[in-house]
Image (cartoon, rainbow, N blue to C red; front, side, top):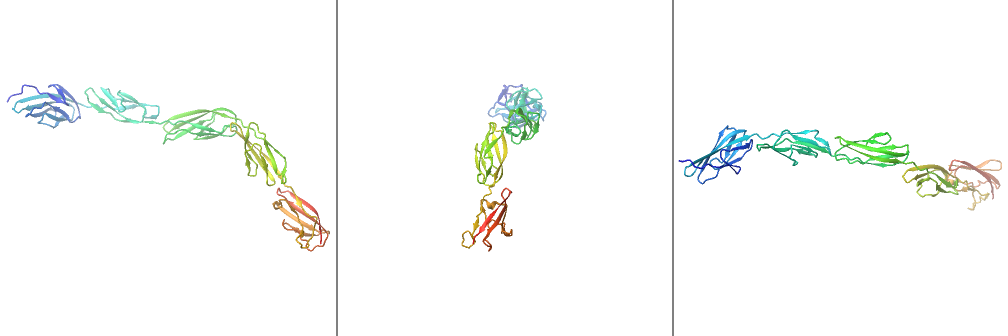
Length: 426
C-alpha cells in the first residue's frame, strides 16, 4: 500500500478550497456540502476531529460528497481519507470555524402609532456588514411612515446572517375638516353644518369658533348673529388618536330687507270681496303671500277674493339677493253686508202664490242666531221662530197690518236688528 502523491482538493458549496485553509461557517446552518474530486473505484472516509457537539455528518460518508449539520460554535478539523481501486491512500483536511449568528434587535425612537405625515425612527442595536430592511432600505436605521410590520436582515463580518425582531407601526389617516354655512342674515339662525371627511371607523370631536368669541362643540351648530359684518369661523377636529385638522372660512352676516305692502280698497265686504295687494318692500321681492284663508301666492302684486266675512292676517314674506328674509302681517277685515228682502204684503189663501211671509237674503245660513217675530196692532206677539226656513202662514189671522221684527247675530258676531210692517190680504 502506498500513499497518493497528490493532495486532494476540498470543495465547499462548489467552491474549490485548498488544503489547510480555514473555512468560516455559521452556527445553525444545516446541510453544508463538502466534497472532493471523485475517482472511479475510490472510497472516502470522512471524520470530524474536535468537540462532538459542534458538527456531525448527516449523510454521504463513504462517498466523495458529504452533508454536515453545524450545531454549535467552535472549531473542528474535517478529515477525508481516500482509498482508490489500487488500495492507494490519499488524505486531506480542513479547519472549520463555526461562528455564532448575529442577533440583531431593532427599537423605535418615539411612538410607533402616529398620524399620517409623521414617522418613527427604527434603528438596529449594533453595526453589521450589511443591512436589508423589508422595505428595501439598506442602512442601519430607517424612518417608518406607513402602516407595516418592520424588520431587518443583517450580515456580519463572518458572513453570518439573521433577521431581527419585528415592530408593528400604525399610521392613522388624518381627518379632513370641512363645513358649509346656511343662512347669513342678521337676527336669523345661521347653520354651520359639518362636512368633514372622517376615515372609516374613526370618531372625532369638533370645536367651532364663531369669530365673535363664541365657542361651541358638536357635529353641527346653530347660532344667531345680532350684528352685521365678516366673521372668521373656524372648525377644529380631532380623532381619538390625536390626529387633527382645521379650517377657517370668512362668513359675512348681512342686514335684512324690510317687508311692507299696501292694499286697495281699505275695506271689503261680502258684496265687494276683491282686494289688490301691492308690494312696497325695499330691495326685496315677494317670496310668499299668505292671505290668511289657506290661500298662498308668489306673485309680486296679487289680487285676492275672500269668500267669507272675517278678520284675516295677511302675511308677506320677502327675500333679497343674499337670501335674507323679512315678513310683515296686516289684518284685513271683510265685513258682512246685511241684505234682506221682506215683502210688504202676502195672501195666505193656499193658492201656492205668496202664501207665507218671511225674510230672504244672502248668507242667512251663516247667521249665528236668528229670531223672527210678528206682532198685531195691540202689541201681542202672534208668531216667533229661530228657524230661517220657517215663515209665518197667517195662522187664521184677520186681514190687517202687522208689525214684524228680525234680530240676528251675523258671521262676525255682530247683533243686527231690522223691523217693518206687512199687510195680510185675504
